[in-house]
Amino acid sequence: MHVAMLRRTVLTRDDVSGNNPSFQGRTAHSIRDNSPIIVGLVAMVLMIIAASAGHSGEIELRDDVKAMHTCSWSTGATDSVNEGVTAVETLSATSDSSGTCTYSIVGGVDSSDFSISGAALSFAATPDYESPADSDSDNEYVVQVRATDSADSANTDLTITVTVNDLTLAIASGQSFALSETASNGDAIGTVTLSADTAVAWSLLSNGADADGDGTSPFSISSSGVISLADSGDINYETTTSYTLSVLGTNFDESDIESVTITVTNIAPTITDDDTGTVSEIAANGATVVDLDNTGDDDSITWSITAGNLDPDSDDNKVFAINAATGVITVNDADDLDYETTTSYSLTVRVTDGTTNSDETITVTVTNVAPALTDDDTGTVSETATASTAVIDIDNTGDDDIT
Image 1 (tube, rainbow, N blue to C red):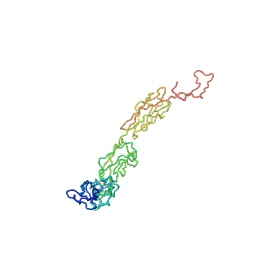
Image 2 (cartoon, rainbow, N blue to C red):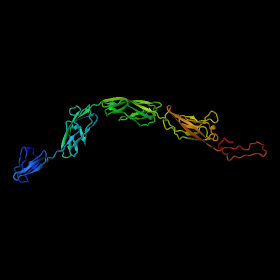
Image 3 (cartoon, helix red, strand yellow):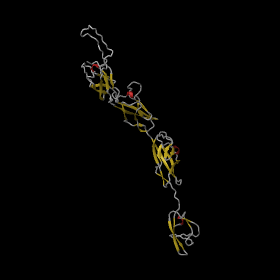
Image 4 (tube, rainbow, N blue to C red):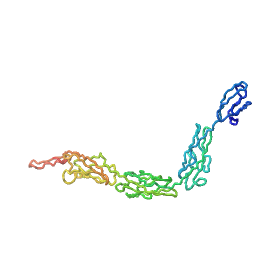
């Protein structure tokens, strides 16, 4: 072993015999005084011989050079982002010790265009392909980043070239959304999406018809591309089943127009199933029996009684009538009402929006009203009255279908 290879481990005079130790090997070297020899690189075993006493022994010499811990980069030297996006990438380096790596920007001709937070490398300002901010205006930004090992502050630098990509604004084609005909104002219908770019101003070039004539179009679009219902009064499946809107997206000097389809879904009218009616047997024509409720579509609906509406006195007038627009059932022929003859009616009622029907059985109960004599009725008769002479006409204030 050559002396030039021996570094940093101290070897002094032999403590076995007090004599100067010597190195045995292909090339022998000896220590002639107490000056230290520095040994490095690898561990080795040397034979030490005491010449005068004939003793020998072994001593292991080890390298005591401390390794400098560093961070090894896994982040690549190139990257690319789309214009309009500030985030570049998350830096990644691994310490070869138990320490951690911290990151900083240390150079690069375009270093001022970047910022770093933790491991997140970002553009300081939103990049625009049409207005590059890099040093040579070619949309390739060069930055030098550093990873520092926390164990001993060793640095490892990496130069990254970030390319900004040009994007052309384009609204995704063929977009369609569904809308319930019973939706409320302000309900979101759907969000118009882009096939490229993100910074867009939205508008509707064409809207649906103002069906109710109140001056408000049925739809609106927000700054984020959300189409919402603006006027629920315009929406009726039975009138219009779908709308085609012309949507405009604008980004600086670029724009795109696409058609978006909104399909109206039909909501069938539904009669509340717990509706029942009660009517007195002495009710007059036009008296309200029951006001039916509809929980579904309430636009352009029609009510009717399809079964169970009888004509007991056979005068061609049914006992009940229903308002076709409101669903209110009333007495149509009071002469048909007689508790002693019929105590209830089972009516089949239908509501329709012209497309879908809803039927429900409604029970109308007839309440009995007992006959009642007027308690102040009195009569007078002459002593010379003959047979069949009228004495008094007694009044009944209750049911008059009596004997």
